[in-house]
Amino acid sequence: MLRESHLDRQERSAQIIAVLGVSYPDAHCELKHRSPFELLIATILSAQSTDRQVNVVTADLFHQYRTPRDFAETDPSQLAEDIRRIGLYRSKARNIQACCRALVDRHGGEVPRTMAELTALAGVGRKTANVLLGTAFGLNLGIVVDTHVARLAQRLGLTSESSPVKIEQALRRLVSVEYWTAFSHWLIWHGRRRCKARKPDCPGCELKTLCPSAAKI
Image 1 (spheres, rainbow, N blue to C red):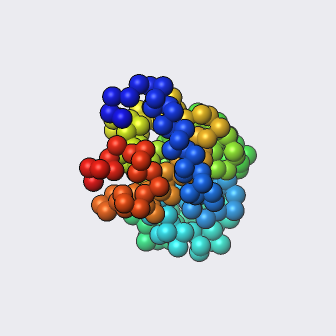
Image 2: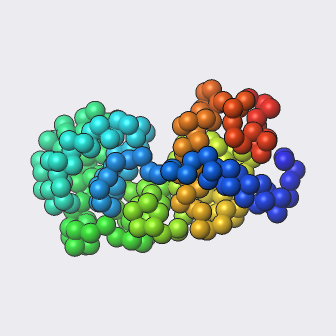
């Protein structure tokens, strides 16, 4: 596999997709949300935090703050206190307020649907924008590269790149566009349930015959 051609790697990627699709037919974004706006806030909060912890915080947060204007007009210290259980809560509170002010002032309180408009918002990088575009709007415009996707892409021998942008570029060349959103969900679920960072379950892995790392870990 280490010397496989691009076409061979594309074929193996297709096989990986087929296996993951059967293994995780219900894979989805595990950040709880009821709207694109709630997903935006939850994704900003999720940086360097677990989805489980974010869901605990947003269970109360989304009852207190229901609209971009609610976030934009609240006292900054109160918002920081309300998300205190999340890592980097002070900077995230500042970003959320700036983001929501932009939503109110420039987008009529609605979450925009383009990469350029999303990444112009405070606290929103390409990963967060891809989450919004794929999960909230059903637009396959990119592949979400979080820590799980980055780790598995390397372990599966799909790329040797280390930066999220270059990993996404490599995966986009291997994965058919109709699977871009689903592929990231599948890898994230597999990373959380089977191919964990410190103790991957290679003997029980559904992908062990397709993974060049299976015999090394």
